[in-house]
Image 1 (cartoon, helix red, strand yellow):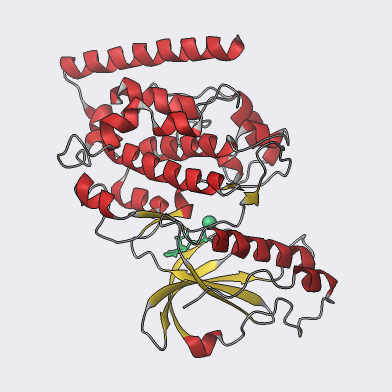
Image 2 (cartoon, helix red, strand yellow; image 1 turned 120 degrees about the horizontal axis):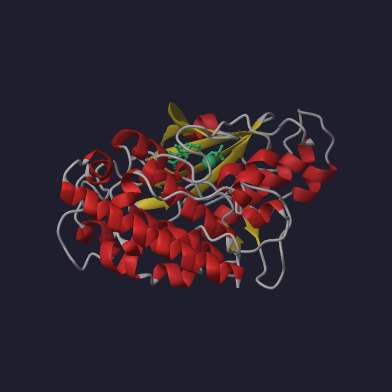
Length: 367
Ligand SMILES: Nc1ncnc2c1ncn2[C@@H]1O[C@H](COP(=O)(O)OP(=O)(O)O)[C@@H](O)[C@H]1O
Ligand SMILES: [Mg+2]
């Protein structure tokens, strides 16, 4: 089914009254006749997503419901945001690593964005199910996320909200633990699903809007002066979190969602990034370098997207050329549990290597 036109009526939305009886966007209103709505697939900061079935073809879809009213925002502004999300999703419609937009609907209270469904759930749920990811699995995730980010950037779209909950496994049984690298490479196994914080961006200009999920936001976003490099930073936070199940700037589970934006900004800008515990102790030097490259505070010194995609870590763990099954699930956990002398030697060497690399990078940043 073709996507509905998306270039309609922002202006009429802005000029419309706040009367809830008008359908401002000019989108179709017959959702209930077209789709049967089923179980909840997930809930985000703005919307709830249900599984749906096309009542004619029987095709399974995802239906994202987004309210037209939000606290602290005028209705016209919300409509503008909804329109933008849809426009960007439509612009990405040829990209196989992005969920395909099928149709959009509205009623007085909500808009409904119908996309292809991903039956494997999002990366946050994947990590809740399997625990900290093995290094190999992490590298495969990194590669997919960066390919998605590159597709966005090539179309002049800054993703703006790279985090595990915004990427879904297309199939329940096709992921790095269940499939061979060759099977994973046949068609994309990971898809971007959420462009609610994305922005159209022209390479030679700067952005200033504080937008995204604070804990994943790059330091320069808080300074309101940023560009495409922020997506590489957020990919680094995503990888850090999936590898050790903590946020980089808070130890253990000390990150608290109730923290003020200022406190989050301060930690992101100043707190040390620890990679000297648990799974980090057995990560390869290439992996440590990769994550540190993403989490470099100065955007000018940060690893670029192209450098990341050509990084030896991805060549080593995600190229699929080495064959074999992805690393065992427990790979990351072994790091924290080993007590043998050999393990300790490996761990000490890894810490030393990590510290040396950090010193070199700090020096580069300070220079
Ligand atoms: N196409 C989809 N297929 C399967 N699950 C989805 C799909 N889109 C979203 N979800 C689930 O719903 C959650 C919220 O969707 P999302 O688009 O991220 O909403 P929000 O903009 O509110 O963050 C996601 O984290 C994911 O778990
Ligand atoms: Mg989301």
